[in-house]
Image 1 (cartoon, rainbow, N blue to C red):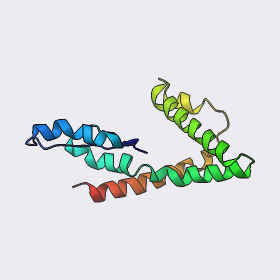
Image 2: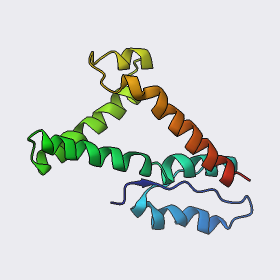
Image 3: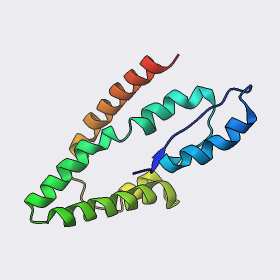
Image 4: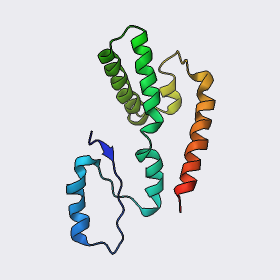
Length: 133
């Protein structure tokens, strides 16, 4: 899809021509932020593997939407639109987290939030500790 986030860190001794030309070659794959070396593992856990944390959930939502009567196309569009809006509202609206979560009064996943958060905490901390030097 060429919409990834591909962080890069160059050694201080890296060839200046390479560091200048690198983004032009690889920006076709998505964004290329220059990051500190000590951040590479965090980016790996959050952005490189991050898709995998949501794919099965989005697929399940799509299947449920279809079982509720939406076409596959309608389900995909609905989920895609709300995901972009969800991220924008949480991260770019200027609202505090507590205010964002109160924008919608019905929250069917609330009873499962603690368990899901624990899954994230355990799994992601575990993988981060394995890859962190």
